[in-house]
Image 1 (cartoon, rainbow, N blue to C red):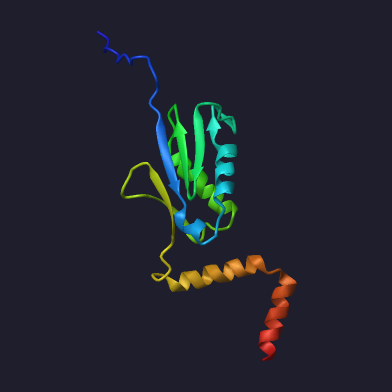
Image 2 (cartoon, helix red, strand yellow):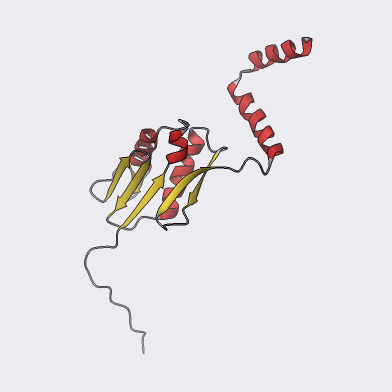
Length: 149
């Protein structure tokens, strides 16, 4: 005898709604929420094609929150992946992290890393970021200036 298969009733697929709360970085003017919204619209894949959201996925922005609503299945993990990719692209991944809010399961929050715990690593990160911002000739001039004092 074969095992009976489950019959799934036809109808509307289960949708999902997720919120990305960017209150702290937007308040500190570290990031622009409009650029994150545009990034998500361009990068979310539907049917294997990026940017073709159609009617299945809607992205709305309210002050410092972005809401992604989907008629079909949308992975929360995929949304976190894209948000981290955005942070990396705009060089703020070293200071911000994407975490799930304790209050609600469908909310992601952008928070700062806890700097007080590991000051040594933050100094190394700061030196690395400073190296990226200043070109080699400028760095050499600064080095000579401070060594001459």
